Length: 497
Image (tube, rainbow, N blue to C red):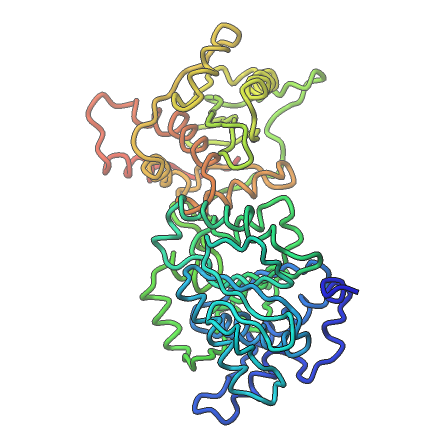
């Protein structure tokens, strides 16, 4: 029976002097000046690590606020605890830099050397900080920086600790791509059959390694243990907190942080950093430019469906399609989005949306299908960038009403321009019971401009600009100031529809 088979069958836990890594750490450091502190959050991590080791091909992502002991527990205590039980285990640990990886490898090695009661000895001829082996055994630890090769070095367990260093790296798409390429092309290919993987990090960005692992085709295999600094669940929706806290209650800190200190951190760090690093949610819970609570929902169809599948609206002032056409037909590209918007008085209603990673032929087919389904949406606004011009050219003689739209300003500027209309509750989208995709639009809007994708936001801001904002400005020949626009928006009343 191979070592990987033992892991897959849960035999690693057959002989455990200490039930968890935390229990071992408490025992080994009880006489230290700063002994190990065991908190409810660290106990949750202990439980998750034990369960990870006892399942085939276990996959675990741990996110928790910085400086609360998650890296020490998962990247230092856990490998020692595992090697105590199975000294032939080949452990690979990785961090954002080789220097941090060396420090972690040295910490594991020195702890073993300082605690003879573990019954483990470092091989005298193989004891470098970044790579060492146990005397008389095949097991040991290889510590590498993200990007370093691990060719020819099989891993019976892989531990990735802090793959991103700071905000600058997190905001760099190039760096995020490098981390992902390292995982797909190097690290994951060295896993022995049945080998578990644990990723420990603070969430700097929605598109970080954890975000991509969750969104990948096998994302459902990853268990995510997120422990926010402050309980933010909604009991009215049946949500509960992993630590059993009441909403607004802060976690017990391994560093001894008080409630007052947590509150000070929350204020000083700002909403984006608090939401990402301390709550494990890269997009603020309430949104940023377009807040979740601003959107209004309707739960009854506003249209009549004909036998041929077309949909007709009997009471409206204006109707149009809005298309964001950026596509590359690859798994990592942005999405093509087409929407149908209707205006009644001061209110805009999103009636339909199609979205997909489509090639040129499929995009044309979707455009034709949406136009046939909503024949009253004669105006079809297409962003005149990226692949938009090609689609416009190919369909202009087949479908009337296609108008190219040259984007003015940045994506953020365009979304900010229509945000007051959403905040004023003049924008309605269908309830999830009518359109399952609508919740995803709200989540993308809440994450904007820090989210992974913004195609639905682009189509929405373009549609609202043409159907609400431009008519608002067109009624006055004088120059319209921003104050005039704010006054005009404020004068509208919420529609009863």
